[in-house]
Image 1: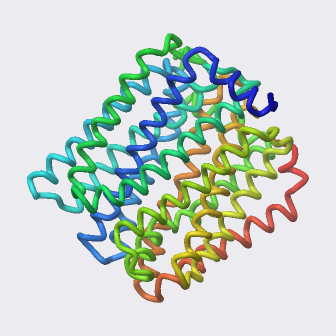
Image 2: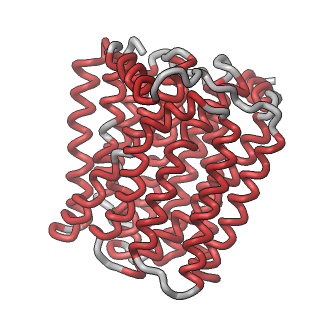
Length: 404
């Protein structure tokens, strides 16, 4: 039996991991349906790219602000309880939006409020899910477990985005919200079948702020960690695609809801291939270099995306974008957990996820820029800036990055 397949089966046999994987797959699937439905609803309500960016800012800013203390909460709490509670709360948020939609009273501020609430919950659920994976499979099998989880996420993206576009076209946005609520509820209840609670890594002896300062001090005292995190902060530019993808689909290429779904599903296919590849390949030896290089490749994809001239061309770039984004995701989540002490995994991962959310900072500026100079030129500018910065980091900082 091939080593990659044998290792994957070994991970799946870990107590409770298969159930967690199934629960995560459901969550990913219906998050994708919700994402497509919300963005398409926004383009029905406004043609302003800046306004579309504002809704993304609401969730991204919330995750960014909540993430540091969320990491402390994760290190202090049983992970399964956090995940069940978080998924139940997200279900409640989705049902609230569905009720407003069904009543025909939906307004943009409702979506902003829902994004803020969901962002606060997701800030906790992200590091909780990843550290819970470590609790179930251990450090040696962690990279392969993260890759399997990413594979499920990628499959869900393909299915969620492609079917979501058709679904919205057939039964409307309200129907998408209603079905997604049921799926998220099922994902929460599945976790009750896992016998491992995911014990706290630290005891709540001191203040949460003290624990947070300890985690930050650990990162700042180690150049390979903070330099790799600096590369992750380039997401402030790379998040531009959140605003510009629907703009390209609706106004540059005139694709319709189904075409938009196919566009996003193709990116999901790229993430799927990357995740499957990682399952069967050995883990990187120099995580800092690989993480930073993947972020640079994503920025290059943004520049290429800006030259869109046909639907087929965009599909190729979407595939490549999804591929390198998944590489970054798996390597960052695995690499940082393996590079820090167990008792700091939640806090350090929360910093990683906080920086990965920095794309929200660029949502409004790129929307304004696109409204004034055009979608393609605006995206090109936002891709070129991180290309230059990350290339310089690799040229002058590779000796430091290779030590992570």
